[in-house]
Length: 116
Image 1 (cartoon, rainbow, N blue to C red):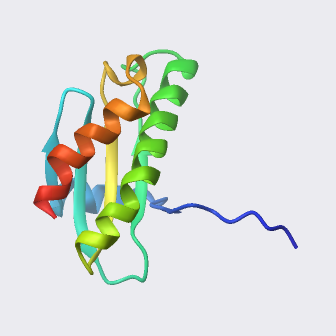
Image 2: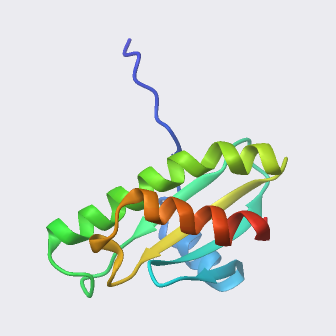
């Protein structure tokens, strides 16, 4: 058995993404749009999307990768701040591939944490 463990649980189904787009609260920054809503699960979940407007596959994958890393770093802070669990959907924007995960992390701490 592998010792590898996944760092987060993903939002995978289209209907879950659509539910968060419609019913979730939103946070808009120059780097991403975040939709979030509390859930009744044991863990928080995250979904990340990047459209073709972002650029080619390399840029889209980079955008997803840096958002994923920033969320991995901010997840313990969310768990410490609140007992609730949340579903998050991040939508990458045009500037996202040009940034690094530290800048995304700072935006999450500054903008998202006070709202939870």
